Length: 175
Image (tube, rainbow, N blue to C red; front, side, top):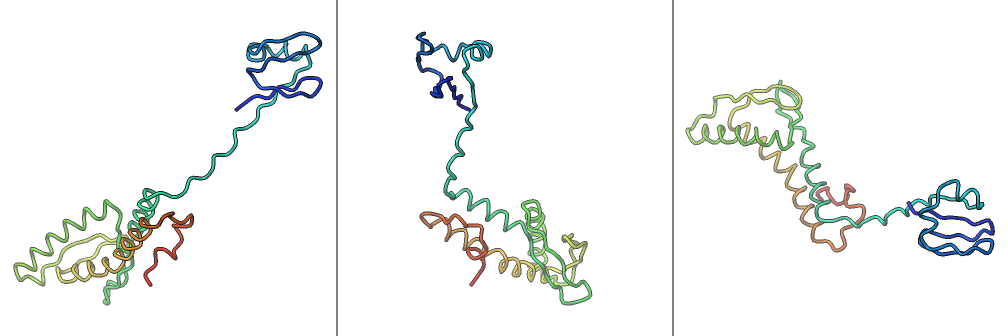
């Protein structure tokens, strides 16, 4: 924070300025070297002036990417349509690693013609058993949830400038 020195005659100075007071010429470095007692003896007061707030920077592509990641990680509700009910399906980066494992297993079962073996999954709601075909239905629902977010992200990244309110749902919701 810059310092402003006020002389008894109300002139204001900053460090690095020479000045005259009561017939005495003070060099440019005097204010920086003066002790609090030196200043007080001469009736000079000191005030710290806060630095101005930096101008807000316009949103960047990285900001859009971060918002996309946040939205992709929110998860979505999936209704199994039976006694399992509605489950919140997690979509954090860690969840997606698990998705990859389940997807590979489900695809292997489908390739083998096995539509009855169940796969244990843990949703944000709790555990559930799904068949490979049921897992594919979840993947389709995930695409319906996730793809519009990707599309919106690409559209926002192309905007010049990126809108200040880029996090507003109006940019992210499918039409």
